[in-house]
Structure formats: C-alpha cells, structure tokens
Length: 422
Image (tube, rainbow, N blue to C red):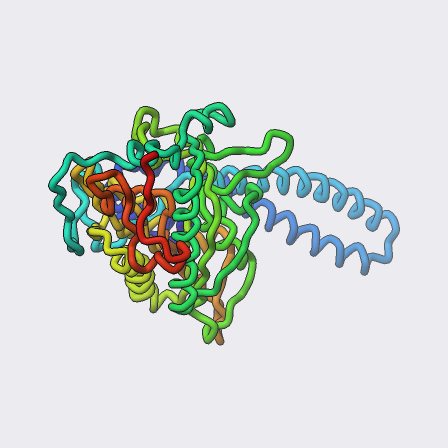
C-alpha cells in the first residue's frame, strides 16, 4: 500500500510513475474519497471537542435547570457523534479499499515497456547443451516409464495437476532437500508454515483484492490455500516492531503452492511448467530500507547459485514497467534454458517490495525517535517442478535416460542416471 501522505502531496509524480505500468490512477476519485473522509473527520473532531467542553460544564453546573438543559444538548451531540463516526468509518473503509487497488511505485532503474518483450537481459550464464540426436521435451521423457503421469492426475483431480513416480518423484524430493540445505548453509533460517492463510495475510502481501480469482478459497470459511510461501512467512511479523540490529532477517521455506491460474487459459498446457499445485523453495528477507537494494542483489545471487551448481544455463533479466508485479518495486527474473522450446523460461522472480507490504502488515523497525517501516524482499530459490523439468531436458541422453547433476547424486543415494525407458 502506498503512503497516503505521498499521494496527497505528490499526485502528479505518482500518477506518472503508475502510468509506466499501464495503471490509470483516478486522481478525481481519490480526491473525492479523501475529501469526504477529511470533512467527516473534522466534523467528528469538532463534535468531540464540544462534547468534552459540555461534559466539564455539566460537572461544574450548580443550577439544576441549566444542568438538565446541558444534559439534553449533550445527548444530542452524543447521538450526532455516533452517526458521524459511523459515516467516518465507512469513508475510511472506502479510502482503504481504494488504496488496496493501487500497485506499488516502480524503482527509478526499472526499464519502461508494456510487456515481457521489453524486459532487459542483464547477463547469461552457463553453456547451452548441444545434442547430436533428436531431443524430447520433459513430458515425453517423463512419460516413457510413467515417471510423469497426467492421466492419473486428471482422474484424481483435473488437468494441470501431475503424479510423479519412482525415480522422478525421488529426484523432485532431492531437489527440494538440496535447495533447503544450500540456503540454510548460506544463512537462511528454515521455517515451516501453514498452507492455509486468512484474508488479512493475503491482503498484507498484495494478493488480495487484486488476485482473488487466482486463489483457491475454502468454501465454508475465510481461508485460502497459499499461492506461495511468501504469504505466511511475510505475515509472521505482522503488527510487530523489529530491532534494527536483528536485520536482515532471512527465512527459507519449502511449501506446496496453489494457483488457479485464471488469467493464463491456454498457456503452457503441456508438461509441468504451469500447474495448479506445485512446490517452491522460497526466500524471504526483512531488511532495513538502507540495505534494501543490496539485499535484493544478495537474495538473487543465492537463487542463481542453485542454477549454477546444477550446471543449468540461465539468464538474469530485469522486468520492465509493464511486466513488474503488482506489489513489486523492482523484479529480477531468473530464466532457465529449455532445449525443447529453444528458449529461456522463468524459474525464479526476485522482488523488492520496499515498504509496500510492510505498510499493509504494519511491520516496523524500532528507532530512537520514530519507528520506520521495514522493507520486504523475496524470491524463489527455486521453483522445484520447473527445475525438475529443466534438468530432465538439459540432462537427457540419446537412449532417453536422464543423467543426475553431480550435486544431487548423494541425495539420490548414489544414482547417477535415471533409466526411464521400460
């Protein structure tokens, strides 16, 4: 959520920033809602002052007739005050709902553009493999021995779910464990969190109200399946005041993630690139505003390290204004090479939200004079299913087996090659 005082004092600047996203900030609507709030607040304060003055006069009044008259006036003021306070609460709620629909301000170094075509490549790393045979995609390779089964998942649930079996399931588990071990060795505290969250938690990180159609909601209560571990982990410090010397606080969490993908109909229908249920190892940081940019770079490097150690070719890009997420001020995407598609695909988004989320969640840093809002940063380290798919494709052999990356061999009990074909 944006600072309302910033909106009141820098409307043109904010409007121009949001236009880079393609967001049309309705200045007149904001001024109308805020003007109504201000009017009711002034009336409330005025009546409250009159009520306080009258209460003192009544306490000191000796003449009973005069006292009765003032008691009558006090009752009317009390009734009027009650009505105006109700109206003020409604106006404040309208203002809050309006603010919840406004995306974050973009950092100055975010390139302008309308779509992913304008994202800027920062660098590419790793060697793109060359094959002397006709390659298969990860779905074909996985289905050779029923290591990846989509028919079973449709029977159990519906499309865009998957069943992994035998060595494929073991490789998926090994990846999760390797990622957790690597990040905890790099200073992240492992944390286990609920997979169901309340509405306030989703509002706190910016998923609600904007992305409600992408969420799986529990029908009989106000609870949602998490779209990412970012939500429960970030809300740990909701309404808390952190000590500056504790920062940065760094967490890593491995969870399933659930998304309806309502806005992606027809995209990535083949394979396990875009699923309703998938797993991620998520990195979350709570940092001092002065260290915000440095910590974003550090977190991104930690996510990159997994790809480097797995010897997967990837590239780092900075998202343009039109492709940057609702809550993010700046985002780096890590994209891994998929040989079957002859292109890079996103495997991690590392974002700096600055104080956008912490203002919603009221996460502050203790200061000698006035407490300040902390900054939040997170990113995937990595998306497990997409990493699995990338390994399958980049490590395939002519006979259809999959070589195991060196860093995963111990996690696979010494297995160096997945012999998938029957």
